[in-house]
Length: 392
Image (cartoon, rainbow, N blue to C red; front, top):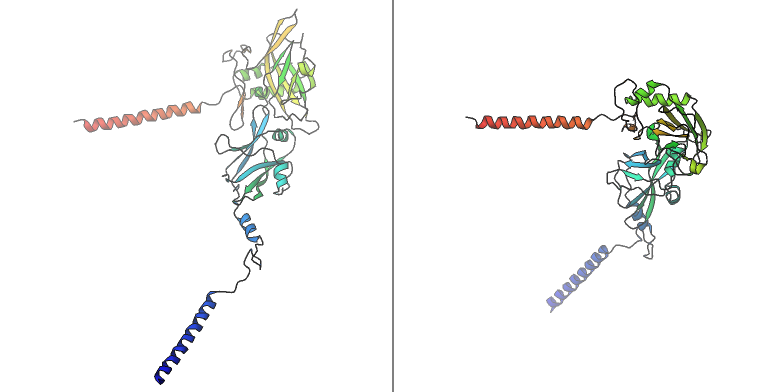
């Protein structure tokens, strides 16, 4: 009996020890709970975690290698081209034009109200993104005599749908392109007894009312005509100097038509250019146009072209001018090489150099001939080796 009691007492002690050990393990596995990041003591959410997520999951565009340029668009417009960057899927881009180098803030107001109201688009899928001149804001900036600074603004959306605004590239000063100044500066232009229309291709915004100084005079220096006929690139430059200094047979400052181009049309503007009795038949005349800069408000601009006079009947007082590049324009024989077929109006090269009356070198034809010759030589060598291989 004593042994039985002894064993029972030992069992009770062992059970008590095991129970105490189990309680200690449970206390160790259940730590004391304290409010964590983004939580309150009563278990609520203070919003800080959500805010951190919203601001950290936005991917901003890398514009460090971006190239921003002003480009001529059509006859009188301008656009902005941006290349050298990879757009981000959830971002929208706009540009802000200013005449100041002051840094803009990345705000919704600047993005929505101070930017050009058109998003960057890549309609041609050529890696060049464009801002179009919807409200003539770019054309106006080009026409005014002031510096142009551009800032790219980015509107980004996080994965949680929260929008943010950032500056991609700021205060980039844009170089203005050169305006046409020879025959390529005119479009749909004619001058005759009954009607006159002079249309220029200068960059222009309709909000700007301009004045045109129009001058017409006879070209008596045959060396200038010879250069233009023979496609000498200095011919039109010489004609421009000649027209500036020549008094002309007509010289008036007229209000330009309030339209999307800088032009003059007597039907709308009221005054016909009358050259009756002032023209010598089958002679060459220049048409010179310069724009009034209004005491430096606008950039200076001037252009010149030439025409052949046609005094059809002195008694009837009928006359007109056949402009350079038209089918009615003919060259006289100045004792130099070249036919009487008029050359086409000048076209600017890719580098911006003018080639008045001329054409660009036919580099493509030369390269084609070289590659064709190399191809023939290679084929000949291959056939020669095969003939040698199978010849006994």
